[in-house]
Length: 125
Length: 115
Length: 318
Picture 1 (cartoon, chains in turn yellow, red, brown):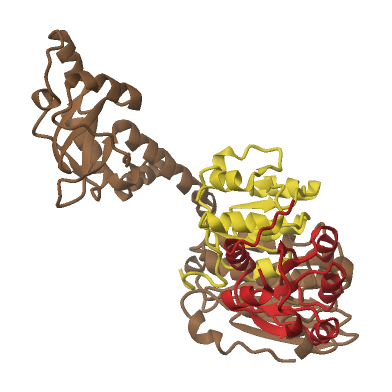
Picture 2 (cartoon, each protein chain N blue to C red):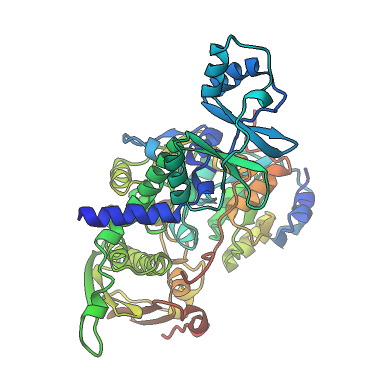
């Protein structure tokens, strides 16, 4: 599913100043929903979307480390300025949806976006 | 929908509060931030989280939630389990990640939006 | 430099298949379609030609040139079958793009129908524009990867003559709960390892372990040092601090065990998964701690194909 389609389903709008259109057609292959940093870090799937209610700079850090395609903040939350700065620097598009976490997951799931796995698809490249 | 039916259809396991499984579930709520649940969850919601800390029971009880499901095969801490028994709050576990479990709950017709 | 770029583009043309760049939603007409209908078909779809298909088989191709010629003759009433080119030259979807581009060039055609190999089923259509767009897209994707590849120093170990060699990176981590700045070490290590050409999954494991260790230093100590020792077949992380130390290492290792206060939890931390995550990422892990003295953590991550074998032996000692 393309990032722009994900945004449409989530009724999400861009949550940073930069232009995200170059990333609009990037493929989102799975989704992870979590408000806990350690849990996000136990996840192994590049090219995923991160749904979270956390808005601090550390969310951007972990998204960078795990190669998430984009982050979408739920329940209308907006990222902290430091977080926006880092995201722009690392080229990780940020979005905000008015939906609650539960509803956001439900809609993406209904659109057949798979959940990410807990392990790398193939451990050794 | 009754909690017992959801439990059966999604193969959730009970860890505590088995006496309250006939509770009616009105909808779902997902969050790992207690302050958010306190502010936004509604009575009768089934709460999906991976927080295992005993404070989740206090929150669920205060907000009169239908129950708590721990995802990612997380197990409740000992204190949490005791507290859940004490307060008779249904505490269930699932091996699925949050996104997948919520997706399935949603598909069962358990909405996240209420008028 | 220019020479290198050209080689890269050539490589891409050989790598790309017709099927990667062709248009998959092909508009076709039937032999019995009246030529007068062609105007709408071409205009509405903004195309300059279309394959003629009968019973799923390609029987011809008709273009805007044929249509103009027909107009010039006073638009006599006839069907596509009377005006189409019959001996159609087509390409297969699994053919290298370079071959198809050569064909387009040599024959002076604007488009080529694409067939599923061994059949006459039309699965797409290839135009010059598609070829260029496909290449540009691929170049863009590769450019993202090239950024890291560009600075890549993966040959460094091969170039050095020694029985053993290692690279050592050190990162100072501030303590005292400085949430804003923390994470920079893991980020820096990740970038550096990518530049060394280590595979992304291994890099991610090292980055996650470093990140969790960094957070522990930031939240629970007055700061410490992370040292990454990179050898040709392993990445070793050493994390040291001078207190306060962990009271019960076994308990600290247990998933979900946490001593974090509420403010830490509200930031998304303190779920008690940190050390467990490190263990999951490591091929070997060793944790030594003495209350009042400090903590020493060693993590080893193997580079290459050995992980699955060794992983079960990951050990934790206190």
